[in-house]
Length: 230
Image (cartoon, rainbow, N blue to C red):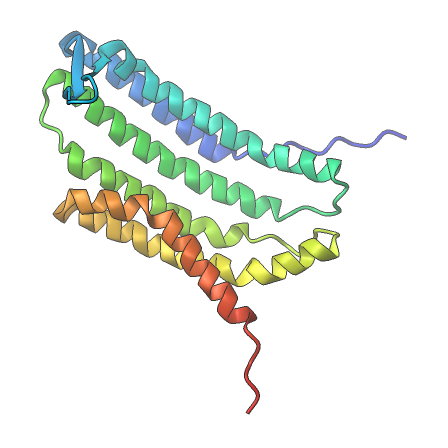
């Protein structure tokens, strides 16, 4: 009797959007190529370092390729998770549908960020007026906010098949929604701050994951604290 091989878990909508975005980025590179300077200096030489020079070939090709690589790695992660669970002989599945939905959302957010970042880099070579300092942090805010919105559906189901893992799941479960609300708020705050104070937006966006993890950890600890007897 042969065992039917389970269908691969792949976030197809997110992959399609990432592929279309990478194609659009490549098309933008082709259109901008004749007007692009041979290289741009992204950081002037200082006392302890030389100048950072980016050739136009790198700018034109690296961001689209990077998006495709990141999308491929994220797309393979559900299947890797399933194989790891099989190797560890854990029963059930840790909310695979929820994980796919999260990956679809994250891939959409990454597509927005990479597209805006790429257009900003191209403008550096062509001399076009592009609000790089505002647009890129705002795009990062979109990514953070989308991640927060979809995060609750990734919460593991009660299917680990291990009492130790079940206890851990019950402990961290309250932190998912708290982390989601925090990320959503910080993503929105990053977008607003990017329009008003771009340098502050870099700090807000860059620290959002750490802050969300800290807030969620505090929420879990407060939930686990035993009630005081009167």
